[in-house]
Figure (tube, rainbow, N blue to C red):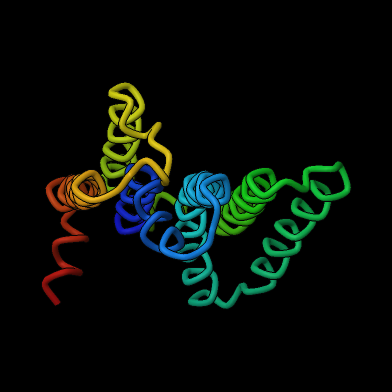
Length: 190
């Protein structure tokens, strides 16, 4: 979860610079780079339900209840199909539909485990701290206007600054998980 929040923070803070480096060196037009950066930003939010889903599926596999995993993914597929039928076919709309599908699947998987299992397996403090740090970084970059850059306007030293800001955002998110939850410290030490 913490690593998903850190990756999302890095992508959300640095999407224009990342898309510029990955795709801006060739013949791709500036408008296409803007689209890729926007899709990357939307897709970054999808990392969070995927992380929760991965944990729930691991627990379901451990207790031998994988039929709920099939149900969870069937729901995710249904959400994406309904979005397509409703006409949500633009790239960012499909990314949001995928995010909604993963969120629905995570809710089904965690629901299959039940409240006692959630209390046992979910360290709420360890989950909330990285999430709040992620939201704080996204809000700060929006408020400061750092997220509004277009990939074509980022070059040279501004790219380096954007990458450094992405790294700092990710490190702050990881640090928040490190200081709040002993599970992350233990996992990274081994």
